[in-house]
Amino acid sequence: TFLFTGSLINAFAVMIVMSCPCATVLAASTAISAGISNGAKNGILIKGGDALENVSKADVFCFDKTGTLTTGKPMVSDLLTMPNVDEKELVKYAAIAEYRNSHPIAKSIVDH
Image (cartoon, rainbow, N blue to C red; front, side):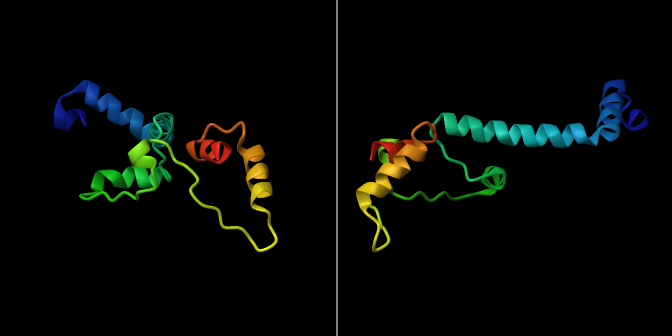
């Protein structure tokens, strides 16, 4: 690299990346995790790293109208249970399971 660029800093950076490729992999996965975490803190749910990476390639975005965009807070609007399951019991146990979870969908279950 030094022969092509004449830059000792670029040559050193290339040498580090070539000798430690695991650091590059760790940095990329850490950046994706940080992006998902930052989105969650701001109420944006991201399905996974692939979805986050593919956003940069998108030309058009479509959103569903579940109240998440209009109110900024997801909410449970309807329940569909099995024939012998009591709706109040289901909500009670779901709320118990999600009580200490800070995820926006978990909060909507507890608030229901």
